[in-house]
Structure formats: structure tokens, C-alpha cells
Image (cartoon, rainbow, N blue to C red; front, side, top):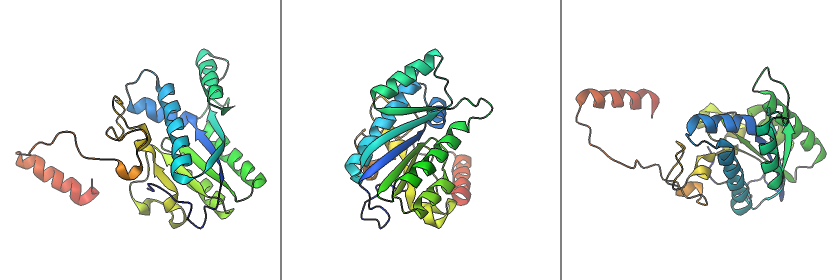
Length: 227
């Protein structure tokens, strides 16, 4: 929803920021939407880009970055992920619940509230998710006076999909993964450092529709779904 947020917002009197990542969910969405054989590397690129955006466009200073995953650290992929996270200063939080993919999301929400109880409203919270919106968590952090931004790869498409008090807390993170050579299904014509306003959604190829049935079908879709 939100593109570029400014600290002139009355709720964003923050200098330091804590970035919390639902790694399990982000990894799952990236894996589904890309044919890249190294989705972990794509997610790490996304985290780097988010850090730059928070620093350069929101004038915040990320002081902690914490990733939550259901990935057991004892297997080979767990070792690789842990090493990559630590090399970037990302704090790992592993959950061992195998019964649900939501375990890491629950753990992230619980730690966010715990951190919020220790840090005053001068600390901002930046959340990264694939398609989880964490609306109750956003509302609770905002009620404590924190500046909150949640970056998601699948953001609410319309403002009325969200409660009024958190409609401006969302950032569509597609543009963070833009750039030449990215076969991700995300915004492919935005550079890695471009701002959300600069992202272009124009089709790469335009063809005239000649089929009347196709035209009527598109008119029907546009009329009822606005897409």
C-alpha cells in the first residue's frame, strides 16, 4: 500500500529500527514465484535491499535484524542459512514446530511485543513477510507509539482491505527485488536502488486485441475486479 514513508509522520519519531523477518514465509513466496535455484540468496538480497531502503529513504538506523524460521539448524541447509545470516549480522531464531508453517510467524510476533515492552516508542519496527500482513501486531505496536512498517511481497491491493489505523503501514516490497536478470515474477523493470515511485508497471510488449470475445472478457474482468 504505502510506497515511501516519511518520518514527518506523527508516529515516526524514531532514529533506531529493529527489522524482523518471517523468513519461512518470505522463502516460501519467493520459491513459488521464481525459477531461481537459490531462493535463499534471493531472500538475502531482499533483506539487503530493505536495509538500504530503511536507511536511505526512511532515515532510520537498523540496529538489529532478526530472522525467524522453522529451518532446523542441524541439517545442511540450516548450516548454510545460519552462516549466511551471521555473515550479514542477522540474528537467527529457529523454531522446531513441524506441525505448522505459522510457527515462525508466531515466534516473530511474540518477540516483537517483547522487544516493544523493553524499548520505548523511539524505536521503530520494520517487518518483512511474503504474504502475511500481521495486522494485529501492527496495530498493537502502533498503539504503543512505535513507527511500524511492514514490507510484503503480496501486499493488500486496496486500502479497504485493511483497518483504517494501519493502512499507511504497508510497503509493497516487489520493487526491492527488481533489476535486470531477475526472473522472479516481481517488478522486473525497477532498479535495485530505485524508489517505489520510480517503479514502472508498463508491459514489455503491447499487442492490439482483435478478438471480440477476448475484449468482452477483459471488460468483464475490469468491471467486476478492477484488474
